[in-house]
Image (cartoon, rainbow, N blue to C red):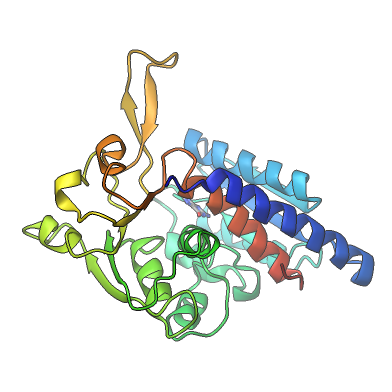
Length: 290
Ligand code: GUN
């Protein structure tokens, strides 16, 4: 089975749109999301554009501040603070990465935890870790939601996460280990220090790959029937495509799909879920709920 993240993300966005209409009708509130985009990193520009489009599609208010890469840290912090105090803005995100002269962690911590729809603030990460409802960061949240909507219950299953980043590996492992419905998994995090990665991957009932390397996970490394969630987004050369490149995940999809019971494709798997969950978080920040 191919897990269709595009379809599920559209379903979620439809639900968010209805909930936003209800929030407006009943309380006069329009969810507002602000973006701060520093510099001209093409990937960051493209992400912010897609997120802005999603706001339009769902009837959210959005504001984008584009600033030069030379902005000082104190000017950026002042901008964050303005949005923190802007009542039209319920969610605020500073697109990462930031230029080297700016302390990224300081900027993240300047965002009001109540508006931190990325779920990157230590307060929200801490709440997530101890099982208190909060803003869950969009990619791990999207993975949990995909499993749920495909009726794949991780409870009692061995989830093996490959990768320990702060925005995917660590949070998804923590979300799935919680003693909660649609979690309650036995979780292993493996990473670059593993001498034999396949020792871990072979044990997975559910494998979550967040490695950042094409074909890092092959068929031989997995057991039949495994559920595979591929979080990788890697651009590789492909002379047969118009642009000369194409996107692939971390998993050798063509071969792994023969033995997996379910697998997410790249593109069209986890990727589209990320924006949908950001919209869920922004709706929540404004007081709505799907
Ligand atoms: N850069 C890459 N992913 C993200 C994300 O989810 N949020 C922000 N703010 N920046 C990112």
